[in-house]
Image 1 (cartoon, helix red, strand yellow):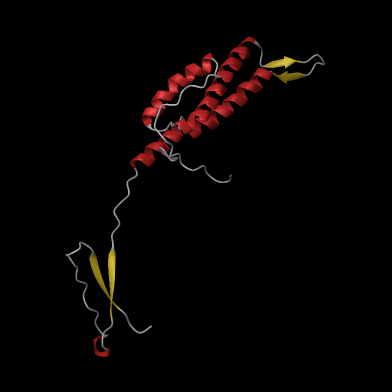
Image 2 (cartoon, rainbow, N blue to C red):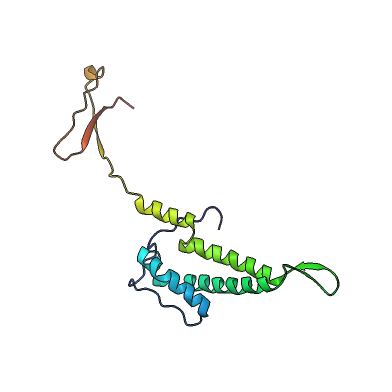
Length: 170
């Protein structure tokens, strides 16, 4: 998809019920802890529905993998020397970077980044202004009345402003 992502909106998809999604059983302990940390506040804010369960689960799993890879990275150097003598980046660093990339994608989709939150806050404060209706009445003057158009007189009966527009021959 090209261009900017559309702004996330609260409850953009109509879903039956408004229950708090349950934590999937396949998540490990770290992912379940992250689920518990985020699910209730997001649901209370109106940005998490049952339809978002898989996206939040994927984020939590990526978070868990990121934490595990960060712990392993602390135990090993960032650069390793191969048996052939070449220096290469630690595989744990690649995993950390990939999981952070995935987490960032899910975070922006779920409204967990500062930019996504400002978009949600901006959408919530947008109010639709009432539309002003202008009624245009065409007046066909007699040939001698063409020199001066009639003045506009408001019609107070229905609260809509009327305008009289003089039409010449087209």
